[in-house]
Image (tube, rainbow, N blue to C red):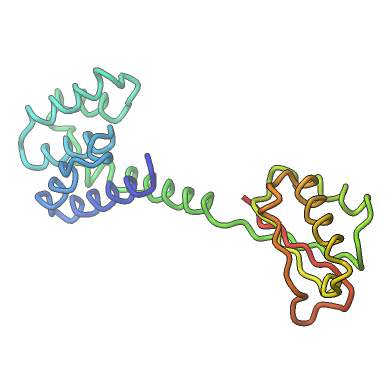
Length: 200
């Protein structure tokens, strides 16, 4: 389930937990992808129990079991329907389970999707083969390369500039068009070459 759908389901659960069943139901029946999930059907069934519509709750849980028999919450809920004194409304029995799982899923997705910090390498001048070889540990993990130096300000070194861009592209497995060369950054030592690897 995508992060947006998890967030929508978490909102519906929060609304239902606050007793705002109509708002939660409207969100669950909105026709988006989250509304078609097993989690949404399970939550809707629990809302139906709260509203006293046991037959509809049973139908929803049975539907889940027909295509996801391994789904334990719906299986246990169906068993509980046959023991009315032991039916626990979702806000009592599972008040923390679903939102906690959804919140953790959203946070995990955000953590995985966060931009990775760039890796910076500074060379004292034109790199040697050993310098370029050391970059191979980043091969396939780099999206683009930002190179900055005052070394290429001299027009006689334009060919060096193009050659180095190609070497970097080859060493890191990126397209040559993803290697960008600019002037030295503020505070960068004269003659040094700073290579910043923007990771995927």
